[in-house]
Length: 283
Image (cartoon, rainbow, N blue to C red):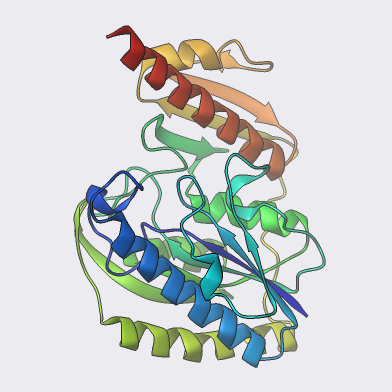
């Protein structure tokens, strides 16, 4: 059996400040060590539970946060950005189950710690067929295209209700409780690792018993609506094929699959970042 693990940063315990999110920030090394320690723990547990190979997708920022030297034999590390379908790059039907670790709630969630959807700098809110979409929901749909179930999600407590609503068979682990956008409370790393090991065992049983299901929406078309933080990014988005301008900040698209949705989101996030860089040069 093969397992796929996508690891983000904002939903991890020990991470609460913008000072931890990027290599240029002073506390980034702390966050990187936390991310590596938990990723190694879940990978080892999956290998101990009978998986012959575990793919770990480094899925935050530049996507080079994990220490390659820390991982054991049997792990395939996916790193680097940009890459196709971003946080779930490389997913295919060969994988028996997917695990999302360090995930956070979508943009606009009250007391959602470091809440955003793919690009907090570029996107204000993102909807799919009228439903506010998080990285968990969108990535689960892309994984579901390949008939792979998401059997465990570990992250921000505000994500629990969404997981239970759309993927009730998925085991949820609360890694932190948001007190505000930049404040949270969390358990010790030892307690978190112990809980992850226990829950991984439960998730593996779900796989073995065939309880978990791939997440799929029965839509003929996927209507993606993005409200951008700045109207000039919407100006750029409006020039892409299939775009329909709703107002100064909002653009709609109709797409065929969740993968197409994710690829477009990734493209628009890059366009927004490029525009930000250009504006800095002009100042």
